[in-house]
Image 1 (cartoon, each protein chain N blue to C red):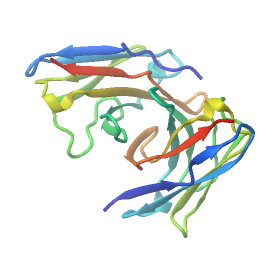
Image 2 (tube, chains in turn cyan, purple):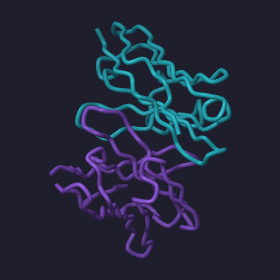
Image 3 (tube, rainbow over the protein chains, first blue to last red):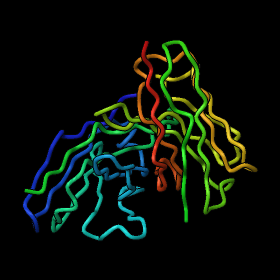
Length: 111
Length: 118
């Protein structure tokens, strides 16, 4: 059971786009339609932003989008807002071993 | 309002035990798989275990296998996490989370802090 790999930080100016990568293996991200992304502000619980690779829960702005290619999933935040500054975590269900792997998190800074 | 409220955390010595509780409200608890996810201070998220809605099966992260036991009482709308043989590295904020689909958690509690220290 290994953690997924995310860059520790990313940044962009208001109105710009930022893309965060999440790299796993052929046993998790590469073999899963169940990749999720979470946003966490300091001192708060995580919030689900994307599930099943590309789906947005109700209430999540369409500025947030997800994609996947091979063993790497990505979260793109378009038109950055100051309130998007937060930590972002990816996760993937690994069906063969029946567990959920999380990434180490990426801190997004809005310059 | 859909809500999860955890309790039961605290300061415990290495080797000790705790039982965490998570009370659900605002949704049909028995229809959802639930999970515990923990976060060590300043660190990332770590899944502890999913739990099927029927209660028929559980799978544990390798780091907690044999020491953590999940259970639920659908009548009381409560999820439990029994933790034994606590280690310093179990120190974390423990979140209760509702699962939607497979492996996605859409509702989270505020967390209950477990500190393992002598």
